[in-house]
Image (cartoon, rainbow, N blue to C red; front, side, top):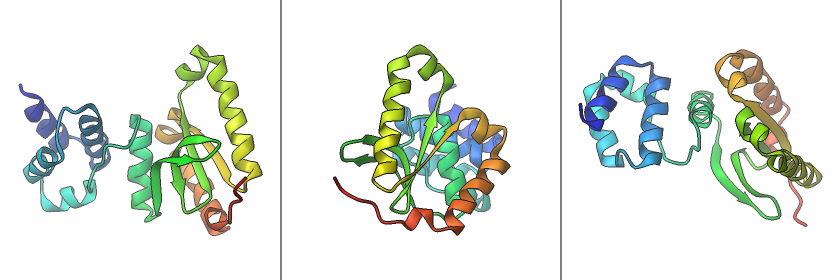
Length: 167
């Protein structure tokens, strides 16, 4: 089976969210081009293709793809892999000041320096007026209702609209 045939099968068999994750991964890894993804989406109903949406190649993990899919479903405006001066790249920026970072346990277990560096980055972001939320794989895939409610609360309180300060 070719990679394209495997992607078609995955998109046909999976939920719209699963299809979105698979297609984003394929784009990120260079297994498929944007044109090929558009063609793959012709193999499902128009309704399912609309639910899947337009995958990108900015997500660095399946968790990030799932979160991007869910944020779009909530109709939130966000950017992925945003560069913030004196901090570096953040996974997701909702509005102008809500930062969402997706962490893997393996990453921090293997690299204590990364764990400490992330806390330093959080401190700088908070000092500049950002709200920082760190989510793990389990939060996104097994406890989403709780964290969706948390994010909705931040949005309701307009924490994503707070002004941030430059250094």
